[in-house]
Length: 124
Image (cartoon, rainbow, N blue to C red; front, top):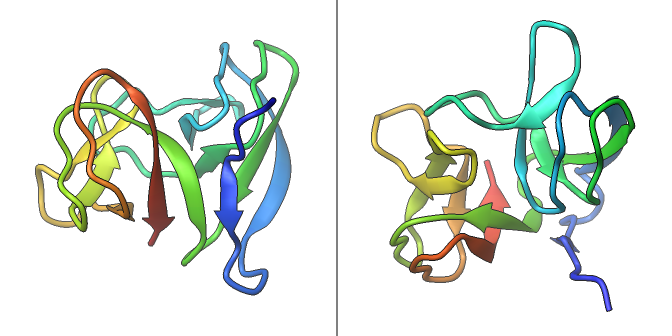
């Protein structure tokens, strides 16, 4: 059975949009748009978040991206994250505890400890 990535769209402020994947993407990966207009799992610490991958995709194929404010998703996270902590796109791709003011892209709705796994996050 597939893991549900979209938990609650908060009354439909979120959208599921198709983008071309620039690399292999797993469901729940935080995504950023690159200079070529494709999406990749966030790899730059503090990168702007386009959204979260609804489904897995391989390079050159369509990646379904959940985007919006106030939606609750299951996103890939790494490191130790406390319940209620602000999260940002981490240097390795998954979300992690915010290190710099202004980089927060969501709030952890579950506590998390390694290894990388899906947890509930409300996107800001």
